[in-house]
Amino acid sequence: MENLLRTDWYVQPPIDPEHKSYILLAFLLDVDRSYLTRKVSPYLLHLEKLEKELVKFRETLGYHNSRMEEFDRFHFTALMDEAETFGMTEIIDFSVPRIRSRIDDGYVILRKYKQVLY
Image (cartoon, rainbow, N blue to C red):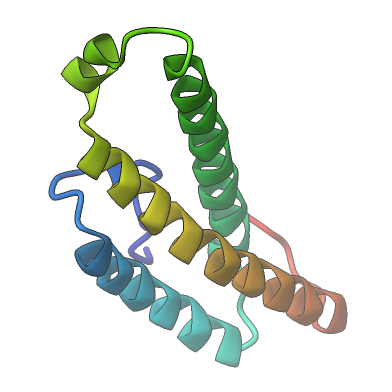
């Protein structure tokens, strides 16, 4: 079985954008190798799941940040400090376009070389 990236990989310690970028790029290298052999499963559906999780987390984070303008930031910093929040945003902003690109590539391969997704 291929090594799939955990769907919560971006929130696992350490919250370091550079470290997370290397983790993502290593995973995407595996995806690219699979795509070169015209095999899109299980990566394509997993990439969609990763993208969905990242976008959902970014929206949730944005919602909480906007709500903090109305309330005391003290309660939020108990959960996550501003450096971590910025790190998460940076990780997500780096990751989503690269994942989206591989999803698009996967569907190009899938249209040309029909196969079952799993």
